[in-house]
Amino acid sequence: PHVLFVPAHVVPVVHPPTVVTIHDVGYRVFPEAHTFRRRLELELTTRWSVWVARHVITDSYATKRDLVAWYGVDPNRITVVHLGLSPGFAPPTDPRSITEVQRRYGLLSCRYLLYIGTVQPRKNLRRVIEALAIVLAAGYDLDLVIAGKRGWLSEPIERCTVELGLTNRVHFTGYVADADLPALLAGAQAFVFPSLYEGFGMPVLEAMACGTPVITSTMSSLPEVAGDAALLVDPLDTNAIAQAIIRLCDDEDLRTDLRWRGLARVRRFTWEECARRTLEVLTAV
Image (cartoon, rainbow, N blue to C red; front, side, top):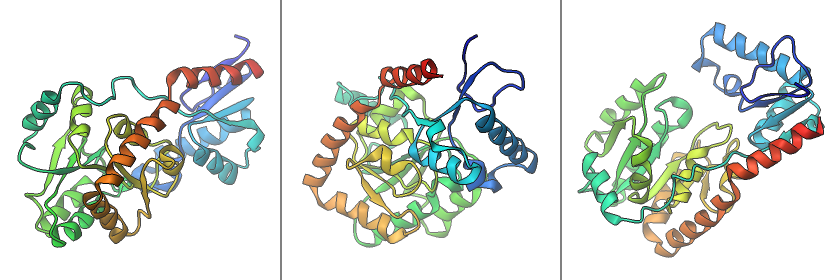
């Protein structure tokens, strides 16, 4: 081929002019999440790929900054191409679908906050659970639904609910089928995603597309994905997370505003635009 496009990180040893996508460098931010062998593999292959490729694509400006800072890549050799949103994420047209999904997961009788993603320390779930305790102590009636499979070090996160006496308030659903996510999102009071590190942060867009107000993090790529359509909080400040939840509970106008801002923002993130910008990079090499 005249140009090789590698969308998954590793440029072959023998290659024509190549464009490679680096999605994130989470192994540097959370090295403890990987074995030594895996960290070494990721470090060496990333270093190799960004130096031998003619051009590099990243999903976010945050990852671009990381590659410049940690690997000394010329920023002119990196183009940011945001990912697109699956068309399956939209407000449900039939309200009964929300009730049916809530029934399936045992949520019919509660108002709930929602997190979607792997259960692991990088997602900052312990602070979300601690923030829920603050909100409940302030007199609010909310549960927390954690929807996603268990990842590394998920056990201490689950133990936290026992330590805080919240086992009846925090629901671990395990894996949730993609088909159920829009209804689960649409039924939530808010989507809470104050992650400590994301290469892009697709769940934020998925929540916005379903009309759910979003609370997310000021770190990594999340501010550029969320823009002005979410409440941004310092993810290291448990009280700030709690106060954002309380603001959304108390302010119906804010919830409505974030809903419409979110629905407008997600229109910027399409796979057609992602493909168009990727093709521009490939044809320029």
